[in-house]
Image (cartoon, rainbow, N blue to C red):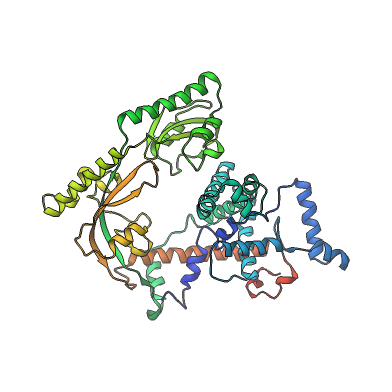
Length: 491
């Protein structure tokens, strides 16, 4: 239903994704990325490969030297083994779609092109960002393998130990982050006018206009389980103990973060983070980090994620390299039962007509973003009140799909995604439900505007890519000469 002739919406969806189409499969690769070498070694390898691909040496030498080399782009060499293992990992990730070597090669060339020019344009990524991304992916692997140990993860990816997996992923993630930053820089200033939106919509043939899924407008009340005051004080005392040991006894903050922090995303790297003032961290966290001098450790403080102490390791211009320890106060079953009972009593009042849903939300909801608006939930991506039901959390979708307008749901129980020690208890008020329908310019203006903006971003990226392909050294191996997808890369 999304097919277009004049404007290819599939191209919009694929090209504007900050992660490349097969970046996920690439992230699963734990064997094939080349190990770092010295500059001299890099140049020697590159020159050898280029010579082989250009047929400037004897045929017998060429066969030996280009064995496994699929191509060169800028300072990058793409190996045939890279492509094969990328395809295998793509299948391992659970995809039922077939992907050819030509398609995988095209994806890899695209990412290398962005990464190469990101380096040329002095775009950088920090070691902390790379390590954080690696940690996230290893934890994803672990969840997919039912809580596998480090060694079991290494065995699956045919590595001797988990550190080898990390080393390989760090190389992969560095290139992916560089590619992402390059695309972000290209599109960050792209804007769209109302007239451009109108023209974009007018160019779509009427019988090929997109169909939007069922959408709902909801309000919700969220009551969170809370720790007792005694539990909070025990947590603060622990953090003060760690702080005192670092400041007065010379203890290593990174070691303590590794041993005691409950932040699974950073504890293995000693709680390290690199941040700027504009980064999307909790306000309290940024205030603590930017109030310190190098070597100082903050007093314990609370965010929506739990309780922290922060150590400022280094100041690099506008960047702060910090380490932190996160602890969650213990929450008893009695405290959980109290939170649930509070919401249950308020729900009875709403159903009986003793109060409105909006007033109840303002009175007891712990979700600050929605409480002040009477529980009204706003789509954070589009800024609209309507939510695409197919893109909401499974718990919400399964609850709302059978409700009628005006209904109030029963209590939904789920663990807090930010603070793993907290249980959330939620009730939903279905305000409005919009059936699936063909795009209407007036009704769906914001969605159409988003598509038009993506289209404009795609066109800018495409033009940039066409220009850079002409300016960048690219050599495709003979095995890929017949790939139609790679014709624009061949010179």
